[in-house]
Length: 158
Image 1 (spheres, rainbow, N blue to C red):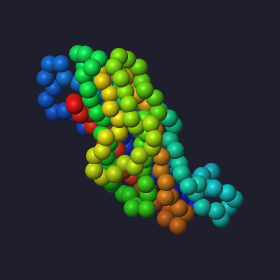
Image 2: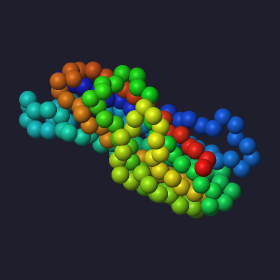
Image 3: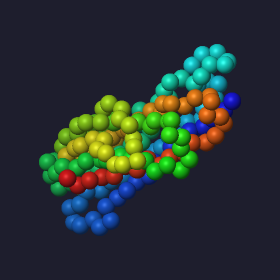
Image 4: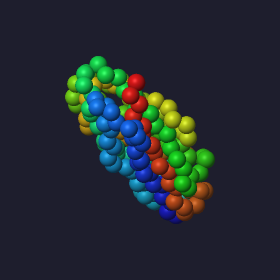
């Protein structure tokens, strides 16, 4: 039996960017083809409890800060296309990236819901911030279907 879960990363940007505004770029995504290799054991067993993407499934850059003390927050939510309520998607920051300023939060996986929530915070210009995803709740009883959702990362100039 084959099932598939696919994630597509979307970007929400500030509509008007005045001089000195922060800029935000996001690259990457995660598609998880699921088959016999993801079984927890031999034939007849269920899928492993969790499937985790590469540590760099998504790479985030925050630039345009005039000072290393200029604060910002990256929030996350999802927009479902074809999703099963039994599935849980989580996200975590896996690196601090490079650049001036600071970065904090987001190192533990947190559930990505339909409502936006803060994933991590920082100040100044930071690039190459890596984000990973984790999927849980997938079972063989769900049948052979494609599950998809769009993950939206939003930069908040705080």
